[in-house]
Length: 208
Image (cartoon, rainbow, N blue to C red; front, side, top):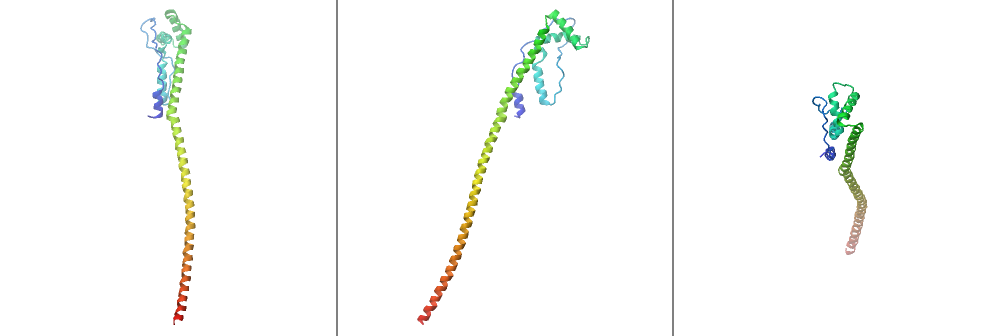
């Protein structure tokens, strides 16, 4: 399995906020579906998009009852009040009067989402550290072992090469001595052959 796939498989194992959005009392007509106030995100690549999709799912405003409530009150006002700040002020006023929602509760809701992101970041770092140990550090150790084995083999090769040079030198000395011995023997043979031939002639003269 590719390295990045291992990371993707390992991260984000913690559960999202186990809270259901509260159902505020509608002001008039049906309440529109919850619209996230998070800014649009344009991922650079597939990997970034997968990470962002998971993070966005974990920190959806609907996971926090207070934020889900204020968003539900603000959504119907989108076509009526185009200014976002004014729209949410109006929604907050409605939520305060009808749902008992406070500014402090809303800000704490965003703090809760930040805590979820912090938890996800901690889990991501922990899981990637584990993947690093199995997919990076382990291979670095193997590379070190292989390099050590290569160095040992290179030392053995160097020793063998030195032995070859030594044997070649010994071979040349032996060849030289052998050649010298052959020359000395040939000279001795001819000398002794000549001496015997001379002695034969002398005996032939004596014997008549």
